[in-house]
Image (cartoon, rainbow, N blue to C red; front, side):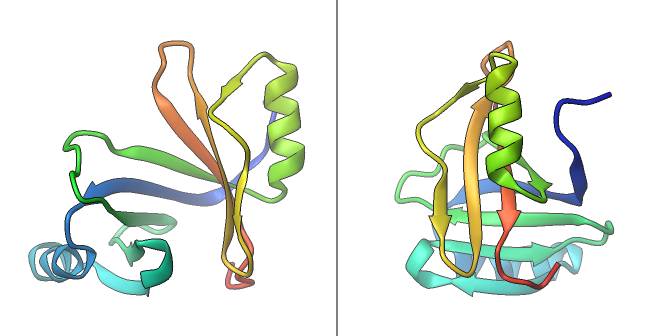
Length: 125
């Protein structure tokens, strides 16, 4: 049995220089549909053609190509984080919460690959 129970959603977060231009590109090239732009958070989300898979666009002045980070959805981020920490999983800082949107926590696998867990606070899932 697994330490945490994931839901049926996964987000692949990538860094981009201009979220709006990137969203247009992903729409034109692959038919991905814009879910939302959250300008105050520098974040956009697009629905891919795969059920439960979202592309997250994080705006950065100096994006680092090749740094896609899978973000796994959980029902309760506090419970999931506590369970993972009890197993010795290393986290990067505190859980970050954007009220009414999402709570996120970055963690690392044994090889140092970054992953995230996220609890949707929007009520849309």
